[in-house]
Length: 374
Image (cartoon, rainbow, N blue to C red; front, side, top):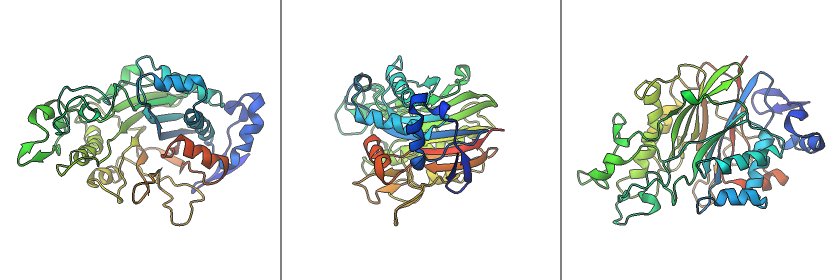
């Protein structure tokens, strides 16, 4: 069976046996019309998606998934199985030490026909208490006073689902790097004084959620994921604390590739995650995201959706109803220059059951890129 994929030509559908149990083959075939397009044999599909699977307290996400009645979790599992990335970075998934919620989500996806042998997550900065007033409002113990915004430790973290194992010995967790240790850090100042205080700036980490380098052991050799989730560049005051931090979280990766923070991969890597930043639209310091998109070590395939309604940007990855403009490109998959890009896309059906499921799942859309691995 052949499916035509936006911009990059014909793509062969993987065997139904890989996607589903025998009883579910007909259902999978029925989904082909809304499918982003299956990966070509000899390619690796890498994707990122802000699924917004976060709850108001620890353990609640696991509870909701295990009950089997959570419409959002079910919609997320269906979409992941439908798009079928080989490696998927998720944002806004609550973290627990034994990865029980993530494993339950993996099992939910498996029930839809897509099996991930590896689940990976590390403790994020979100909800990590500092004991200090980190936003300058004179109050302590609020979500804004954690290393990264969060009402509890691990709220809205990152996770990786992969068909291939992770080289745990090669993982670099750079989430503890202090903001002030970034070269030319744009730390906020008010009236010539550190904001909110010098004490706060001494302990504040750069990453709002996390920043990892994760080697995945693909059959053809290791592939390193440079994974991140930047904070929104809004919800602050004239000091532009969040805007500056967002800029520096994106700028970090260029310093990392320069070798400033340890040994960086020189080939077969993919920078991917949620930048919370469009290169042209809305608020934020644009030099951060523009620097990444123009970095000569990276490729920007500009994934687009098919059947874009007139007037909507085809490259958008989110629809925020109360934001103007509501549709922007804020999630990215940027492969290193040595990859051959076979196809790319944004999963965004606009009609039928697929569109309804997507609205239930998240305001964000999955971004995927197929990379040649022969």
